[in-house]
Image (cartoon, rainbow, N blue to C red; front, side, top):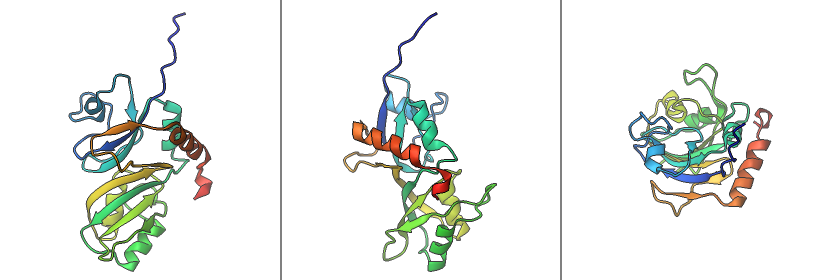
Length: 190
């Protein structure tokens, strides 16, 4: 039998700039894998829309990626959002209640924080990753996303020292916390 040695695990915190597509598909123009041009096979954990920037975990650790993306786990993801119109108290209540965004199932409740005085900028934490979820949540309250940036995923936080397009390896402590976090999150934790 031919035995191949286990490849060293790679964990990168990448500040995805706008315009990069979160796919390992080489035929896709501006894909994240070609952009990074990393020397070993890696892939993004989850997706950010082409026009969204922010934290993206890149790895070759399939089991961890599965744990973080499993629909049963509901790992928190926090985004900075700039909206076209100010959020009303009712809008905030609706975002925090969850609801119908045209998906098969209703969204889980979100959490609005750090609402700016003009009420057009805020942080929104969600526990799912439905297609265009935040954009659709704002549409459901008759609003529109002007700018979207992922700040965190689970215990991993976007490094303020990174500029868009830069990445860095995760520390051993970050890897351990991320694995712990992914292992503990369950759908019953909602």
